Structure formats: structure tokens, C-alpha cells
Image (cartoon, rainbow, N blue to C red; front, side, top):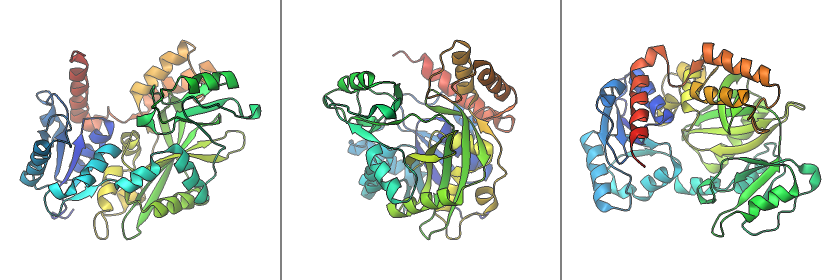
Length: 394
């Protein structure tokens, strides 16, 4: 690989997406830096186990000129060419203060106007429909609003319209009648953004992971989440892409002017095979580690979008894909299944013995996003970091 590739840094805490990025870039011999933004430094030994340069910055304080100056100084000292993150608010702050950063620094994150356009599930729904993607009916309700949905559409799945502005916070709720819907809406805080509601569809999710460069080069891979629990994908398997579905995703990304990496989430109806749009995340995210373990190198794809001509295409455009997932989530799902605590939003939601068998089989034989024999050092680093965080008094 060429020696003049840029030095890339990722800013934030050490979660599974950050771990996946550091693993990928290190494996390909790229210069990379982990800019750790948290109250406490990384535990001793963790940087050495990760095998990359780590710099502790303290908690994020973009409103503090001294903290911004510190970040700029670190990036200059480390000769960082590209800076990325896993959080839309962090990315927006990086763009907002871009004049404070070293000259020539490239920010690999969605621009604020793109983040604003996608912040609301309600607005995403309209953009997806305009792009020709299949969508489910959707209703939007704010605090103290009368929640009126025809009875034929129950049960409903409720999600925050803008996750960071909905209180009390939740990820997903299922309501079975109008009274339960109204209770949830009445429980929203007066200052809350509100919720969106859609008919409950029983089926797996489809994830369309894509990358797009400014010159129009793009690629997509598709995974089916065939085990999910608590609103999170437990296991995903690669599937052949539907050309019409991928074309709709490409149109929506082009309309928004997205570059870099992103992923679409669809829900697939097991009865009809219909795949309906749920949301679009214009960033690295919670499945970055899973798809890396499955064979799609999303962190490398992000870097490819920034380089003229991109990196060699095989690792990005034609990966050898496998099933993969998160075994810690599978263990939680197995315990919930054995205790009879599965919900209608989980998949599969019926057949306790069959679901338990699938989860147990994956736990014994499946690929995991964190614990991999070829990356045991970084897995140990991640485990030490998570244990240290749990020991911190709250």
C-alpha cells in the first residue's frame, strides 16, 4: 500500500465502532490516532494493546476555546490529515469550528445541514418516499397532542422523532391500542420533540451499508438482521442486493449530497417480502464492527472516499462476506428468551425453543465483532476499558 496515505484520527470514546476503525486502519498499515475524549484516561496498557497512538483530551468541550486549542495542537503534533467520529453532534461541532483546526485538515463527517435534514424521522420518511423507496404509514405526535390512529393499523411501533430531544428517552416501544398510545404521548415532557408511530411489521431488518466519494464513486453491501433483541441487531448475514432498493438508496444519498459512509435500515415483512424504509444514518455506527467482522471494511471504505481513485477495490467493493454479530447481545437475548421476556419488536418473536437454539448456535459458532482470535490484543484492550468504566463510582 502506498506510503503517502493520510494519517486518520477518530475522536470520541472507545466503543465498538471506534474499535473497528482502529483495527482496520492498523491492519492495513495506515497511520492512525485515537483521540480519547472522556473524563478519565485510558487504563494502563490499553494503548499498547490497541497498537495505535492514543491521546487523552479529557471530556468534549467544544464551547471552550482552550480545549479547542488543545485539540488543534494535538492534531498538528500528530500530523493528522483526516479527522472522523461516530457522533453527529461531534461531527457538527467539528464543522462549526473548522477554522480552529490545522490548515488542510479534512473532516470525514456529515455536514451540519445534512445532519439537520436527517435529524427527524418524520423528515427522513418524506425524503425516502421522494427517492422512490417503499415506506410504511407514519404519524407524528407531540406532547399533550391527541394521538389519533385508525384502529386497523395497531399494533404500532413508536420511536423518538429526534432521539436526543425526546424525553423521557427510549429507543422503541410497541403499543397495542389507542389508550396505550395516548398514555405514552401524554407522558412526554412538555419540552420534548415528540414521537413517530408506524404499524408493527414482523420480520428481519435489512441493512444497506454504502460508501460514496465526491466524484460519484459508490458501493453498497446488504445484510439481513435475522436475530434482533431490544432494538439492536444480534446477528446479520449477507444477502444479494435488490437493484431497485440499492438504486433508491443511492438516489437519497445523492439528493442529500452525502459522501463518506452511511447505512440505511429497512424492515422486511416476512409475509410479503416488502422492505420498507426505517431510517438513514450518515456515519459510522453501531453495526460498523459487525460488518467489519462479516467482511465489509467500512473504515477502509471511509478513507477510500477521500482519495483520488480510492484504495484497491476488492476489500471494499467485493468483500468475502460471512454472518457476524455481537455475542454479548446474543447472550442477553438468550437469557431474555429463556425467561419468556421477548417482545413483539424482537425477531423472531415466537417459538421460544427455536429462537433459543438459533442464539445458542450463534454463540458457539458465529463471528463476533469484538472477540476474534486474529485481534485478541485489541479485544483485551476493549474489555479492560469497559471493566474500568464500570468501576467508576456514579
